[in-house]
Image 1 (tube, each protein chain N blue to C red):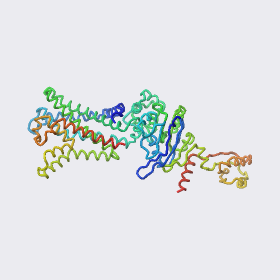
Image 2: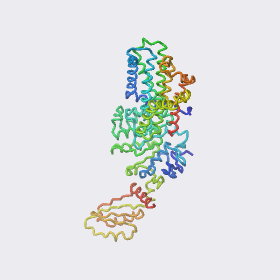
Image 3: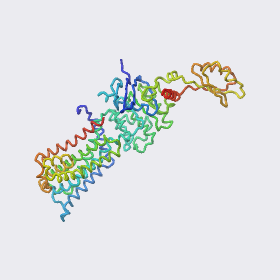
Image 4: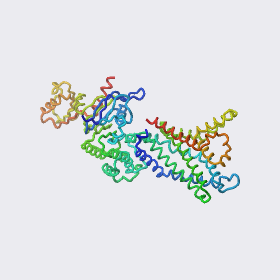
Length: 274
Length: 309
């Protein structure tokens, strides 16, 4: 399948999607939001403890994770929900399909262009947010921070893939937006509550292995774990490290599962976009 | 033997239980302007989508220049196709020239061609303006400009003059004639039958997913046997006895009006009717002849079909 892809067609459509987001200042707006939050959390993240100021990169990342876990999925879902259904509803999809471009190339072009917009705004935003603290950061800090930004982009890609799938399946934009909002509620707000409820109801009979495996069913939980197990200090802060089996604390294993979350909805979208 | 530009063979398309296209076969010759007409829901759009390879037939096959519309090599064929959908929707946030750049890139046509086709459709002055500010007619011109990119040899136009003013329609057909004279094959649909009746070489009338009739306009007239209309304007006080004058011609229908008479006659009696009028000499001030229009033929076929139910 990959051998038959004309990547120049993918690049043309992807560039258009990316340029559209630059032009309508979407990238700038999202980067500003991320930068402001990063800066505020780096300085004020420990205000509840009665102090302000930079307390180290691990504490900053831990605070940022709590914020990003809400924000990035929402932004990614909003970014992708009308990628296909919007073109279909406006009437431009038919003309696009009559061009020498396959449906897979259209999906890839849309997905990669939107991913580029999300990634650029994430890197710029969190990069700029930490710029005033650059003199206080060592190489290890920067490495951890880069890992946090990278994992945020991966989580964004997973939710973008989900929203593209919704966009292919949905009959119209209104339904697509409804479903994407429902997905956000489910993964970001409801899923962990359900999991906790299941733990309580099972009165502890739900083993840590099962509990950890269930966490893999949610890309935002994978993102949280990826950042937890990247730093011992953060592990201690969350206090959950002991319930996770070793096989699922490996960043590579977690990254692979996140990759599956990116690929699976995209493949489903490709199958349905016939 | 060279393959024809379009060959549709026993094609059917069903959506669930609904047969949108029901066993259609047709062929379009090189350089031909071919009309596709029918009521709403007759199957025109579905047939268009099938021919463009946007949907796959449930049965039968469609070949464009020998390439199977549902085959893997059809991507190459698409580079030779120009398509204007019924409602051309461009990307409003882009300028006219940027929209053309996008389609030129996808068709692998040099971007240098974009300014030329924009000028050809009369949009040179609006090239840098955002499409958001274009009128409906300007959007349609832009749609036509993207059709012309890369000098396609197969052109599909779905209601192409939607939103164009009379001058725009004139310009549109002038360009289309030029493109046709360079060898392009054109398939066109329109609800404005008077607009295409003098322009298409052959046409197909679709009804409920089937071909109700096909051929040139003259062939359809001959098949349909609709009466020709002759309007004779006469001198006041002419004293002609119409019934007696046409009594020897069966099937002739007479309708008097304030200035003379309107005569409906089968095509075979047309010359005889004119001979009768010539015999009236100076009593005849003027004669106007009407052949059945495409619209009348269309309604005639529709009526015949409706009657068959």
